[in-house]
Every structure is written in C-alpha cells, then in structure tokens.
Image (tube, rainbow, N blue to C red):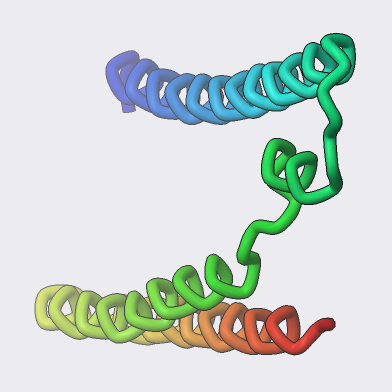
Length: 124
C-alpha cells in the first residue's frame, strides 16, 4: 500500500465526515428558521394554536411509516447480500459464510425495524 491508498482512504472518510456535518448543519438551520417564524408570528400578535405549532415544528411526523419503509429496504437487501456472497464464492469460496452472516444480520435489522414500526403505530 502506498501513498495513493492512504489518500484514497482519507478522501473517503473526509467525504463521510463532510456529509454528516452538512446534515447536522442543515437540520440546525431548518430548526432555527422554524423557531424564527413562530417567534415573529407571536410578536406580531397572531394567535398560534396547538395544531399550527405542531405543523410548523414538525411534531406529528409519521415515525411508523418511516420505520416500515426502512425495514422493508433493509430486509430486501439481505437476499442481495447472500446472492453477492454466493457469486463471489464461485471465485473465492471462503467468502460465502461471512457474507451470509452479513445477510442474516441485515435480515434481523430489517425485522427489528418492522417490529418497531408496528409498536410505534400502536401507541395512542
């Protein structure tokens, strides 16, 4: 491994860090804009009911729906990982069991997300 491999790894992890920081920064700015809108409405004397506040601040999001969608995506990725392991094992046989293990892990995570969606959806 030379300098190119190290720079490639540094660039990859730098990109991941930038994406994470940008997501956090965007979330903070969006929340500040929502609070500023609410503050200006209160200062101008407009009545702010609970429904408008929830809508403006995004309180009533459908968490069960998001969990269900992500659970389905992860659950359907599991057979893909197993198939990938089988295809790679045609050239390198020892890789099959680790990738089948990764597929099983993905399947368990997907089932867990679907169960979490069901339990969140049943709350009052």
